[in-house]
Length: 135
Image 1: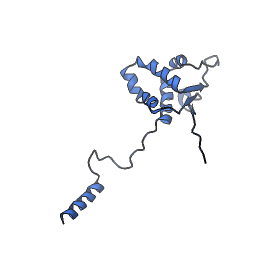
Image 2: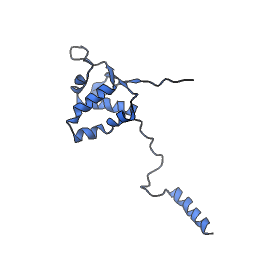
Image 3: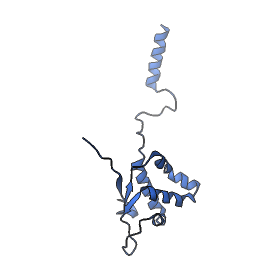
Image 4: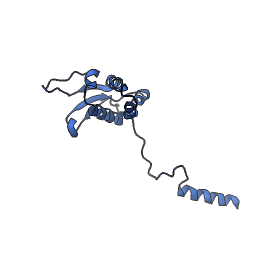
C-alpha cells in the first residue's frame, strides 16, 4: 500500500467576516522555511516594518491560488502585493491556519506539570529503591 503526501491544502474560512474565502497553499516546506513563520505575531509586534517582507515571503512560499474577488466581482490578482493590501486580520488568520498544517504541535502532556520536581509516583519508586539499597 502506498500513500502520496499532499503538496497543497485548501484553507477555507468558514466563520466570521471572511467566511467563504478559500486559499490553496503549499504544505511541503522545509524545516528552515517553517521556522521563518514561527511566532509571527511576536515578530510583527517587535518590528512592524517586517510585516510586508513577511507577507511577501509567505506568498512566495505558500500561496498557490485563491477565490478572492473585489467589490465588482473581479478576481483579485494572485500576487504578494495584493495579499499585502488585504486586512491584517485576514492575513494573520490565513498564516495561522497554514502554520497549524505545516508545523505540528507536540501533544500536550497527560500529566500535570511538577515544575521540575519529581512526580509523586516517581518519588515513591525512588524512595523504595533507596530503602532496598540500604538493606
